[in-house]
Every structure is written in C-alpha cells, then in structure tokens.
Image 1 (cartoon, helix red, strand yellow):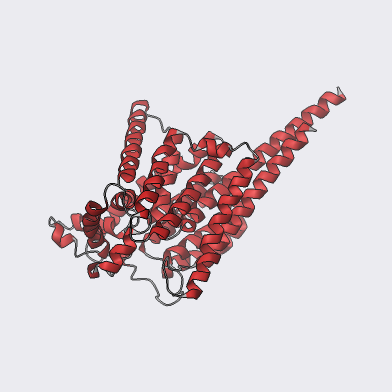
Image 2 (tube, helix red, strand yellow):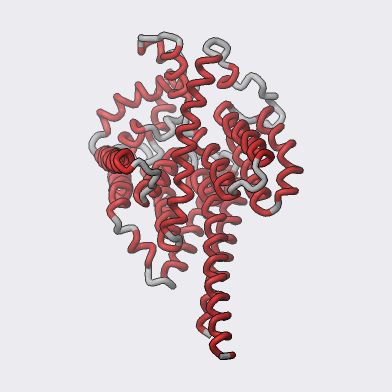
Length: 427
C-alpha cells in the first residue's frame, strides 16, 4: 500500500507542475507586450488578465503545494545563497516607497519573489544532481556564445550583418517581439524533440526559416546552434538527448543576455575605438546607462524600486528615446535597490570566484548547487524589466522537463518497491 502511495504522489506531483507550467506559458504567450503603466482601460484590463492574475495564481498555487509539505520551500529560502536576493527585494520595497512609481515597484517585487519562490520550490523537489547536470550546460553555452561573438565581429567588422538583422522581413509578424518568436519556436522544437524525433525532423525546417526571417540579432545564435545540433544528431546515432535539449534551450537564453551595449562595445573595441564619447553614439542603451549613473547618485542607498528606473529615465530624458530598458545590467540592479544591489553583486561574484578557483584546482567540471541558483537568479533579473512571465516562461520549459524526469524516477521507484513487495509475498 505504501508503495502505491509513493507512485500516486510522484505522478500527481509531476502532473501538478505540468499544469502550472502550461498555464504560465499560455498566459505569457497571450500577454504580448502590454505596457506597465498606461492610461488605457483596455490595456489595464489586459494587464490584470495576462500579467497580474497569472503571477498571483502561481504564488498561491506554489504556497498551497508547499503547505502540504510543511513549508519546505519556504525553509529553503533561508539558505545563505538566497540571502542577497531577499535583501534585494527588501531594499526594492523601501526604495520604491520613496521613488517615482511606488505601486510599480511593489508589483515588480512581487513578480521577482514569484521567480525566487519558484526556484526554491524546485530546489526542494529536485535532486541536486539533476540541477547540476542541467546547469553544467549553461557554462558551456556561455563560453560558446562569447567565442562565437568574437569570431563574427572579427570576420564582419564593417558590415555588421549578423547583428543588424538585415535579413529580417519586417512586417511578416509585426505585433510580436522578434525575440519572443525565436523562443516560442525553440520551445516547440525542444518539446517535439523530447517527445518524438520524427516530429522534430518535420517541424525543424519551417521553424528555422521563421528564425532566419523574423527573429532579432540575439536569436540568430540560437538558430545556428539548432542547426549544429541537427548535424550532431545525424553524425551520432545515439546523442545524449537531454544534453542536446538543454544546450539548445540555454544557448537561446544566454544569447539574449548579450544586450546591444555589449555588442557595441565588442564591435567598437575590435574596430580600434578608444573614446567613450564616440562609443555613446553607437547605442541608445549606452546613453541610457550613462544617464543612469547620475540617477544612481540621487537614489542611493535604497534605490527606486525594481522596474521603475528605466521608465523614469525614458520619460524624462529625450536622449534615450530609442531605448526603453537597461536590461538589468549591474547598474540597473544598483538603481533598483541601492545597497541591496551592491550586496547581491558582490556576494554572487565572490561566490562565483570561489567556485572558479575550486574548479581550477580540481581540474574537473564540477558545478556547485550555489552556482546553479546564482545563474537562475541572475538570469531572472535579466527579464524582469518586462514581466516575471518573460523570465518564468524560459526556465519553466527546462524545469518542465526536469519535473517529468523527477516524476518518472519516483514512479519507477514506487513500481520497484511494489515488485519487491510482491516477490516477498510469493516467497
């Protein structure tokens, strides 16, 4: 009887997270770029339906699940690796109460907490080895992307076709963010490849075509990686399926981390630039960050609150009308939460340096759990300028697969115990 309970619990747990993952993805697909602050009643209604309600449902649902497990996820938040991000949230609330948009700061803090709470929940459910296996691929992806960026910038220093997206057919899908199109195509590819290889072979051609004609420059890397994965699949009869899937997903995720600013800096350095005043003319985001330095001096030590600084600068400085977000660069983390951002950056950089030193000494690819959580949290801050859903939808696909594997493993353990108990009965 106990074995059957274990089996049922594993299947139920897996099903619950499949459901919430599906709902979040559907909500994020429907959300489609509503403004954070708007005078339009219709837009605000969309906000509630596609943005606010799903996040509140997620938090409530996770809390209900956690309450049945003696608040194990909440207790996981007490781990030292979560201290900096929790302090970041506290400073955001304090700074937001004195900032330009207090309600927006409060809501962004709630959104970010949903991401952190989700991470704690998954950490409390998933074995450490599963997490480290997944995020080991992240390190490979980071190295690959930056090497690829340097190669492309060196080969095409003047045309810049790779970054300017000159092959885009503008107007084909004008109402959807190009990055989003790339991610959604990649989601379908990952799910199809995970479920059935024949389906993957059928849909890869049209989806790669969509990548090429409509995605922005930050998504081209993901398309090339998918093509590379196709070659790997053909060369090796039995590729390590999970690593192929995770490599594809995380390559797409980290390609978006390469904001226009860093692209401009790399290209400009390769072209022999040495004057920051010239560099500021390359990108609206660069000007935005330069103005952000002055904002940091004014708002320190508590900041303005998460998600408010970019909007304030955009509405008050004509120089940055071409850019609406700092994309949660380290500077924006400081503007958002002041000393909370300082602690977060120093803590995670120090932890990462310590892990790197241990790695160099051991000469083995060992990924600590703390590094796993750091990458998750940092990745989440990158997308919170727009919506928590924009952050969640990326990680959810990964953890969707993890939960499936987790449920299968527990179910297999339950079946094994059932079989053993029956053998004892026969004996």
